[in-house]
Image (cartoon, rainbow, N blue to C red; front, side):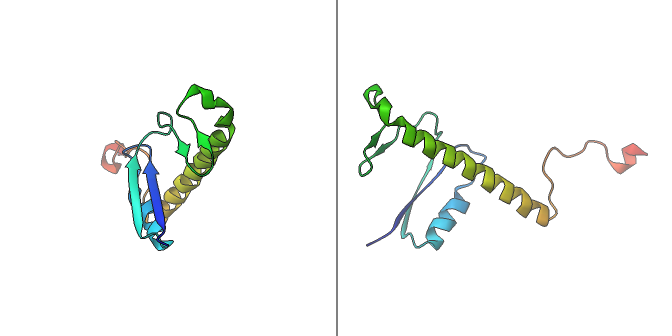
Length: 105
């Protein structure tokens, strides 16, 4: 059986490459990619009986909410890992200082 992966990011500021590389390393032979907000996207799983595409499916939302919270936690973890990796390469986050050492003098 061929493993299939799905990589999604919410904004243009996020990169699919990290997720795609991880899925490929996990053995996925085909990786689908998407950029879409989780707030606007409906979810339907054929095997788990989860469907948020209509109001009549509202009682099934708690598992989706749990999944959303899990995804938010993963985003926090990835952000923290990215900041640590950037710091290890000598990069700092935030806006560059306008005041140069010459201007400071």
